[in-house]
Image 1 (spheres, each protein chain N blue to C red):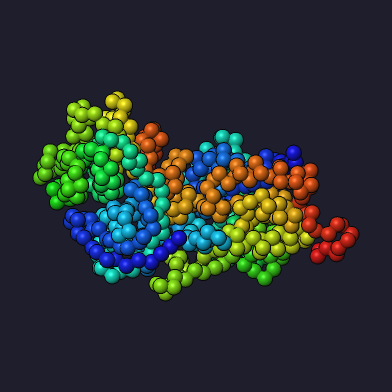
Image 2 (tube, one colour):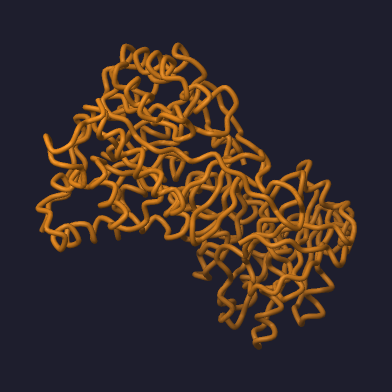
Length: 257
Length: 312
């Protein structure tokens, strides 16, 4: 059901990402998303970066609408449908989180909940550059061990986060890997964890319209990301021909991811 | 147990529950999934000459108790791309009906010819989308145009042609008769009813397109009325659509005259498992109501022949 909320806080997280907070008491679990309606503009699926009564979405400037969302001031009224979709199982004790860019936004509330439950969590964060690192402090203050890789070497190790992941998996035992980011990155995470029999859980993104498992816009193999995802055990999706290669455009055409 | 197999326009279906057009029909894998879930057959998303993105979101607004509004805007990958999707379903043996739309008879015939070549068992002509300029019901509200379109498509293809009729008109029966004259093997009814949702707080229409189409429980009585009238007036079979979520809904449509039914909005509320539930519950329910088969229920609410004056 749709509700109308007002933006009560706006936080500039990085040069390309902004968090908007709003009060919506409907219960949500880490990993779920809402359909966020900017009246007069568009309605987009947004993973919840904060899942409590004061919810939040962390938006990265991608297309026209997401770019405009970045500039919405406190007080802006928004429509919200949801929360929808699957969530992270918080029971594993030793968790490796792998976040690429703004993908960390959906992982952060899961990390906070798991750490509060007594799990240990190592977060490997990747970004293009130091200024684009998202939620490094948030995760550290929640009790995570945080390691970082940047493409330009301005923070942490120079290179891709997947290099860190190889070493972390080799050095320490983990019960699960949670990952969200570019699908090519998630594929590498799956490839690294597979030989060590560490299960991987991925949060994936597709264009969405109805968010009710009806319109087929977010079809991914036999699944619909809006109801069967966005959080999937990797073994369900990693071998699909689409994963890491194609997505569906608004018309339903299959296009390169 | 009551037999629930259906023969519709020469197509044999294991049960009367078809996946309605626009639901789960953009990808071949989804069409396969709907059949695996228990549907008797599937109708594809409506496909046009060229790719269409459809309208911006919000494209839907839901009300669990009585249904939903949508204005998707006929998004589709276009008839050049779509055959590879439908091929996935056809190769898997899914009884598939290809839905097509266009702006006039010639364009309809061109898209229909291409769709028919994919191995679909029949075509459904979308003459009834209520919110696309120059398409859908804007073509399908004029009986003469309906007849022209149906005739052009029937000449262009060898598979049976089903005309999907709009309820957004004073006289849907005239449209059904026009389709029959044009050579349609069946008609399906109804598409969504033109509708508007307003957000009280934002003081604006909810759907980006403004006007949309209403579906779900709220339109069942309207669908029943149109099916009833079409059954009375036409010789060709009628496919009932509108607000079917339970076997009792479906049997009511059969009693009104529907040879088969399409299910759409229920998928949003109950998931694709609705088809398995409907398929499993239909035979015992027909038994309980004293019908030896689904076919025995079709038209059974109408007065016996000779007992009433038919409207044709």
